[in-house]
Image (cartoon, rainbow, N blue to C red):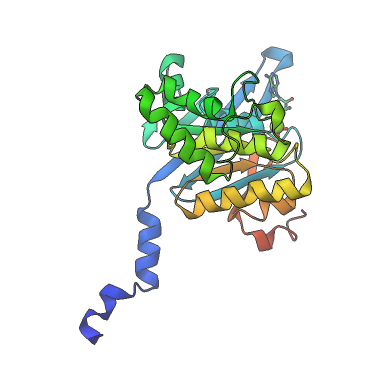
Length: 258
Ligand code: ADP
Ligand code: MG
């Protein structure tokens, strides 16, 4: 390689930093508050939360019960709106958007995975994964193909016709992940995705998250399990409705008390 062109071929540290800085912001929370109830019954579930997550990050949210994790996830996932503060999701100001618009954004931009899978029991794995595309008005012929590809991606190509009660917990969660990614969301959100799984299936599910992130998917996950959080790349910690750690590495987790 000629020295004059070597710069083009091996990005130096400065270029790498520049690339990081130029990545689009997927989640931009600014000074968010969420107050439930009024008067004496008022609960300040979030009290000035600011958080930026960029494209391609893999982030865990930890914190004691009641610290505001689910409230924050509901706002990030456009299932709820903040009391005050601004939220830019993939460049769009969604903080005070009407419910109909939020529902459309949820369907187009977000994928959800929950602790309890939330699959429809009367539908097969394939049909469960096809469902989000009905709302996204994907042509019928394409739905089946894309659902099959998504289920293959999570290792369930041999379980397409099984109903949820014919699948193990880990398999059901993999169907739920396939359903979450089938519309190619800009952001995958998971609230305690391994909370109902044993150690072995937990690892299977975590391996899928890691693979999805390596292929470019932005992932944000709530977990109370340090061993699960350690598999992400950045850990955010909530306490009393505030972010007390914004960017712990998996190696930092132990010294932060987890
Ligand atoms: P976490 O997910 O970290 O356990 P939450 O976000 O569920 O915490 O709750 C944060 C605080 O807000 C808690 O004090 C909780 O009791 C309160 N809270 C959550 N949801 C509601 C609600 N719908 N109405 C009133 N208070 C709520
Ligand atoms: Mg919670």
